[in-house]
Length: 434
Image 1: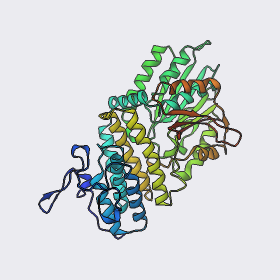
Image 2: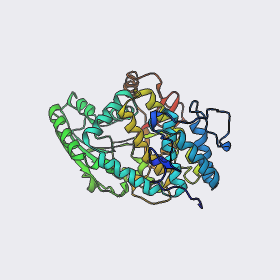
Image 3: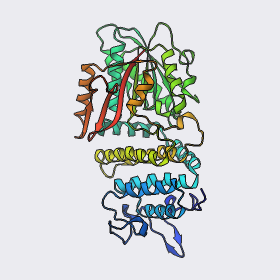
Image 4: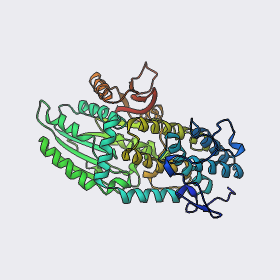
């Protein structure tokens, strides 16, 4: 694209203040509110007048900017990026936050600097990542929202039912939740009526930020298993370029083990063209059950249409940011950290899809119906039992109003169950057998 914009280092988006012609530019972080003198919401962005910070202005301006980038309209791109920069703030209300993080991706798309920005964001995240901070963040998120615990409860229920009566269990965990799913499952195993089984937990690490803390995670899991009186073995597999490289030998699967595969937010990180191969790999392990939990968005079928993909990405993250806004107190550091984590995903999806990276960088979410079509090539769906459904319903009662469980209706509906936020599906959980 023939467009001359500022570099990331020069851009006011990457700085809190900027000097121009001897005058200080607007500090977009100041007082958590944009500072401007124009408040009319009736004026078009074509006039160059800033809209009011009140009302849902971010979606309109962001979509206009995405359209301008698609059409390579340099003048309009400049104008809309400037307007968004004046209004955006990662410390403001929900609209200002969305504008801030999507502005970053739009700027990177317009200047073809997405890969460089993504690598910088990832490097910063890796350097600041520690077990204690990650653990506190996950536990706080689980306390105020069922976004993570919904999948844990549904998956654990299906796993326990599939492994009932077995004495040697092997769970292959492909997720990045620092094993926060497993203490409740260990407690359930410890209280089984029959003999306590031996559990082998193999964690496949698919994100670089988690690698540095897996040693401590393993030590804590072993300590908890001893406390519960459950014979336990922990293994972590790191350094894979592609999940399809996994084999029985790499995973240490034994013939006398009852094996299950648990995937939470993992399949979206697989390149779209390789997802079928990964599912075939799961099938080769001959698992008793495969549990899948994914966020409900279609960023796959629209990947060659920038505007359509942008609108779906914006729709999904608007729901997510609004959920965070209502779940956390306004001054929550945990909320800010969760929002910042989104910045990498947004840049990856919108600004550097044409550049090949390692598998862990892919963020191409698909809807439950799309995953179902893929999984049905190798597996049959397993409906969640009434007991599991009741456990999920009981879980949702612990949280603020707005959350609901949606069950499959009729023979033509998708497999699995959905978590909805204000009647919008946001997560999909399912169980499958060979």
